[in-house]
Image 1 (cartoon, one colour):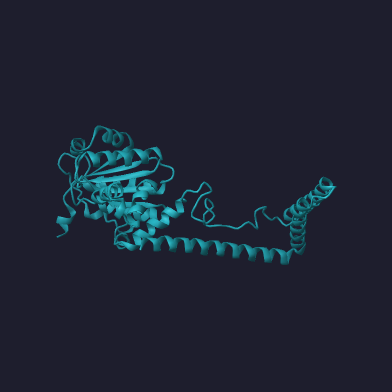
Image 2 (cartoon, rainbow, N blue to C red; image 1 turned 30 degrees about the vertical axis):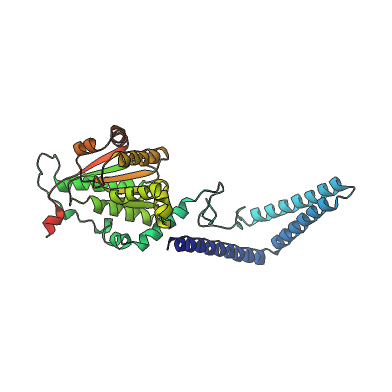
Length: 328
C-alpha cells in the first residue's frame, strides 16, 4: 500500500518535470520564431562546444591555440546573445526550466541527497487522504468555527468568559498559521474534555496543509505505538510505520493530541523528551493538546520535559462547560 504511495509520488514528480520541460520548449520555440538569430547563436555555441571536446580527444600540436580560438568565438556569441536579450528586455534566465520546487527541481531530493520538504508534504497528504482525517478536516476548519457555542458568562474564577477566551485563542491560532514560517512559537492546548482543543488542532492542520505545509497529526497513544514498533519490532514494521516514524521528526508541524492518555512510564517520558528536544533543535514546530491541568502535567512528566514546554510553548487554557454534553 505505502510502496504504492511512494511510486505515485515519484510518478507525479516525473510528470511535473516533463511538463516543465515541455513548457520551456514552447517558450523557446516562440522566442526563436520571434528572434531567429537567437536560435542560430545557440546552434553555433553547441557546435563549437562539440568541436572543443573533440580537440581534447585528438590532441593536435596547436591544441592550446585552437582552444583559445574556439573559446573566443563562444564568448563573442554569448556577448551577442546578451545584447539581444537586453534589446528585447528578456530576462537572463528566461529559457531556464521552471520547476514547481526550486529546492529539488521536482525530483523529491535536494542536492545533498536528503528528502525535500515537498516530498514529505506529499507523503503526509497521501496518508491524510487514505485516512478518515481528510473527511474530518472538511468539517473541522476555521470556516466552520462557531464562536457562538461558547458561553459569555464568567466561568468559576477565570478572568475571561469562555467566549472571550476563545476569541483570544482563535486570534493566536490564526496568527500561528498566517506567520508559520516567521514564528518560533509552539502551542500547548490544555483543559478539560469537550472544549474544542481537538477541533482547534484540526483547524490549524487544515489551514497549513492548504498552504502546502507538512502536518503530522497523531494521538499520544498512536504516537508512542509508532515509536515502540519502530524500536522493538523492526522485523514486522510496515512501510507506513516507517514513514510515520520519520515524519515525527521531519514534518513542519507535529500535532500530539490527547497527551496523557498513553501509558506513562520511563520509555514514553524519554521518547517524548527526545521528540520535543529534537524538534526544538531543528526549529520544527509542535502543538500539544491534553486534558490534563498544568499541575497534572508536572506530576506526570519529567522535569526535563516540563522545562522545554514552559520555556518554548505558549500555554492556551481551554475552559467552560463540555460542548459535547451541551449539544446533546
